[in-house]
Length: 210
Image 1 (cartoon, rainbow, N blue to C red):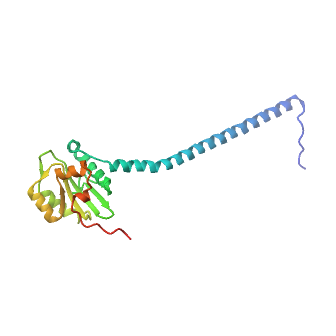
Image 2: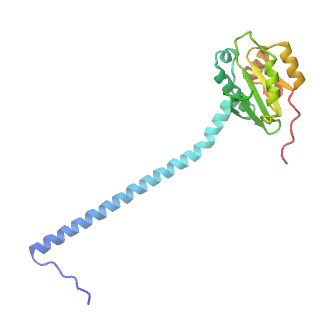
Image 3: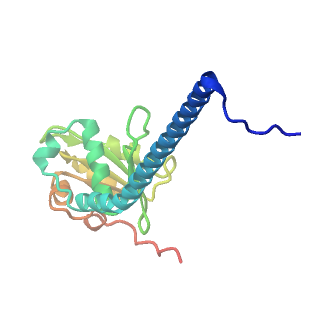
């Protein structure tokens, strides 16, 4: 038979009952505070997530606007190092609507930047940052011709320099289908903002996927 609740008798039992009640109240209060803290934390996390989701499109638009307005003077380009020049070419391609990555480095096999355009295909850029007045020789045209298509699967190959190219290099590039951007063309592309696929006679645009 279940025991019945009995009121505490005497001062000792009353004191013990009071201590039990206080302990229970403290436990309940602690649990309530922990629950409140967890709700506050979860609410804060939810608000941050919502704020991040709301800011993402704004940030992307800001990046797109910044890319669209990218202009680099020849003085800025001349002051760059080799790696910075490669990153700058990547950013210019992105500005023009290409997806692009900087891939140059040891063993890059004549490709410093590789990009893709939905209509113009895959492009390989070989960057030649040099001193003003220096000229890129014909050897680079042989290297790019030998690797752009066979190794990198490129539809378009371009040699880009902030200097010049020898007559032989330009002639070989034209013959082999390796495009070139010298100092004058680079100024039109980087400083004036003319897209590369408007500056160069690239292959006819591909038909959009249907």
